[in-house]
Each structure stands twice: as C-alpha cells, then as structure tokens.
Amino acid sequence: MTKSVLIIGAGLGGLFTGAILAKEGLKVTVLEKNSSIGGGLQSFCRFNEVFDTGMHIVCGMQPNGNIRRICRYLGIEDKIKIRQNNSDCCDVLYFEEDHQRYSIATGKEGFIRSLSNYFPDEKENLEEYVKAIFNISNKVDLFNLRPSEGYVGMDFFQSTDDFLMPADGFIAKYIKNPKLRSIVAYTNTLYGGRAGVTPAYIHAIISSSYINGISRFENSSGDFAKLLANVITDNGGEIYTNEKAACILTEGRNITGVKTDNDNLYQSDIYISDIHPCSLIKITDSQALPKSYRSRLECIPNSYSAFSLYIKLKNSAFEYLDYCEYFMTDYSKVWDFGKVSDQWPLGFMFMTPPRTGQGRYAATALVTAPMPFDTVRQWEKTISGHRGHDYETFKHIQTVNILKQLDKFHPGFQGCIENVLSSTPLTIRDYYGVVDGALFGFSKDCNNIMLSQVPVATKLSNLFLTGQNVSLHGFCGVPLTAVMTSEAVLGNNYIINKLRNEQ
Image 1 (cartoon, rainbow, N blue to C red):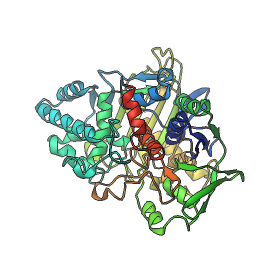
Image 2: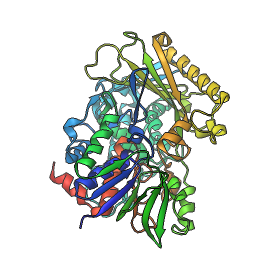
Image 3: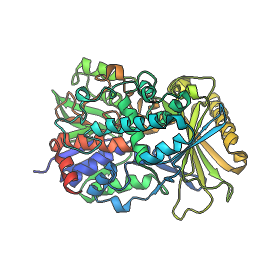
Image 4: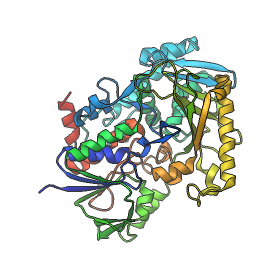
C-alpha cells in the first residue's frame, strides 16, 4: 500500500521535499496558505512587470553543482531558466566610506586574483583563506551529497578547529588587513551573519558556493516553483492553495489529521512541516509536544529581516548589469546589519533581473536592504493594507534613503525610475509565514550550536520538518535539507545513493 504524505507549506523546502517523495512513489498532498506557491520563490506583477520576492541569487547550479544534480534527478534540469553572473565580475562592492569599488571574480583563482589586485600584500593570506573555507565545506557530507551516518549530515565533533569558530574570528585568523576582512565578509548579508555568534561553517558554505559561481533566475523565480509543483502533480500528488493549516490533531504522540481555516480535514500517514517551527507548535495540541521541546524552539533567536524595493525602470534608461552590486556604508559595520541603527541603510544588494532575450537595457531593478524586525515592531499587530499613515510615512522615508544611496554610485539613477514599490519585514512575516520576518530562519550560534540545530524528526512519531530552519538556508541549503527530510522517510542515504549513481 502506498504511503501518503501531507506537507504543510509550499515554500522551497516543501516543494523540493514533495517533489522527491512524489518521484519515489509516495502519495503527496501539499497545503499552502497563500494563493500562490513558492514561499521565497513567489513572484508578483506590478506596473506590468514581474518581480521576484526573495530568491534572487542561485547557487549550486554550475555544471555538476549539488543543486543541479538534485534537479537532474527530478527531471527538471533542462527546463530551468537561469542566467550565470559574469564570471570575471560576479559581484561589485562599493564602500561609501572611501568611495572604493571592488570587483570580484568567480572561481578560486579568480577570487584570489581579483582581490589581490587591491591588496597585493594579502595574496598568500587570501590563498590560505580560500583553502580554509573549501576545507570546511568539503567536510559537510550533505553539502557534497555524500553518504553519512545520520540525518544531520554534519559531524560537528570531528571537524576542523575552524568549523565552529565565530565567522568574523575565522576571517581575522587568515586575513590581516581590516578592510579586506570586511570585504570577504560581504556575503554575511546572505546568511544573517552576527559577529561573535555565526559559526564559520555557515560563512564557508555560502562563500564557497559563491566562489564556485552564482546565477539568477531568468524572467521569474516563480517559474521554478511551478517546475517543482509539476513533479508533484505529474506523479499523482495534489497541491491546494488558500488552505492555511489551522489545527493539527493528535492522539498521543501521533498526528491524526490537519484542519485548515476553511474547515477542511486532511489525513495522511506522514506529515511534514515547511512552516516556521514556532508557527507550527502554536497550532499543535499543547499536550502532544513536551513543554521542554516547545521552550527550546521558542528560545532560538531568529535571523534579521529586510526592506525591499521593486523598481520599474523607464525604457532604455538604465543598462542591464550581469552582476550584483553591494552597497556598504563603513567597513567597520559589515556585521551590524541585525542591529537597529539611525544610520540606515548600512548596506544593501542591488541587481537588475535578466529577461529572455535580454538586451542592453534593464526593465526592472531590485534592492534588498537588511533590516531588523524591531525597526517595525510598533506595527506588528497590524495587517497588510491597514497599517496606518505612520507606517506609510516610514516606508516612504526608507525608500528615499535607499534611492539617495543608489544615486551615489549610480549618479542620476532616480531619473531612470518610472515606478517603485516597497516592502518591509512585516511583509515577509505575513506572506512567507515566518516569525519576525526572519529572512534566513533560525540564527545559528557557534557558542551554543546544539541549541540552534533543529532535528528533522520531532517529538511526534509521524511529523518531520523541512525548510531553512532545520539545517541550511537559501537556495543552496533548503534543497539539501529537503534531501535530509526525504531520507528520514525513505531511509538514510536513500536519495544520496541515487544521486551518486546518476553522476
């Protein structure tokens, strides 16, 4: 008899997990609270243009990259529309403090060469730094799609001394120049890095992924969500939108069903949650989950959130950039994005998304500026569209602040804008369903790594977790976590061995 699986949440984790399990013959049903699937892959249309909400950067999609291998196994590799960033200049950093630009190339040699051009005395240190981050990432079985003894996919206690160092301390161990330390730390905006807290392995995995090469979705990240959804439905699965899980029914240590806010009841053999664990426990019978388990989840700090701009550009007004740009105020503040500051924005990412047949000029531009949830906490009890005049004034002020900064390294940029729309951490909280609008899920703490490691298995025998709060986050991490979750159902190394056999 075919086992049935019910997945709560059609974000990147829920869709990847559902696609894997459906391909392996399980009967998959996915419930999504929004009208569209995808979570961070969601797109929306404004000003007659399509904008991606969150999944702007794609890693692991280089030839034989780890995520590409999973997509090949799912049968969607050739259907994905992505555009590689310029390998000679994949990212540009601009520091307002000294008006200096830094162009960064991909590949180990390219990364070292490009930064050595600015810091020739640091070439040997850069070589040792790159060697160290790849040494760490190579230790992670899950990241390398290697068989492992357990579902965690990482052995923290047999790793290098660098593995659980604070990321900022790890960088300082290899890089001597203070400015260069801040430059190689620029990717911390992609994992919610905190000085003295974020473990070096997070920095190493993200940075090595970037060095290997980054891409962007062509046209819409929502198209990728549809590809994953098609794997589910083509294999007999079902996806229901506008179906928010409202109550998880239990009997002893077993889930017996999920009731939605539409008063529909869904029952299955196995249940998988792709929503934030703290949101999950709120709709689960308090008698089913031990108080200690609930308390542990609730005390894990969340990563910071973001303020975003979605810009429609005038026709033939601004050239398409085949790289991403990162604006930073001061070198000394690259680890301060999670702190409330009067000097906001401390930094942001700027990009022009590619379109099929991309010509010389860009049609749209995106800005993502890290912002702690405390900045908007005064409106946390409000709902979208009814937050009040003060909130709209706040959004306008922040939009003006960002556009002023953009004009500093793209003079005249504001004259290229036809329309602009903004969103805040409250938008992320409400549409992604994440606590405090946490952009990167739970924050990992090298000082208490066991606290911030959330197992795939739960205290309920037929409930498992997937998504960015479990292991790794982002486009490179969540699909790997989905493999972990799937193997908790199918058997350890079941999917990994299939991926290895298909190479």
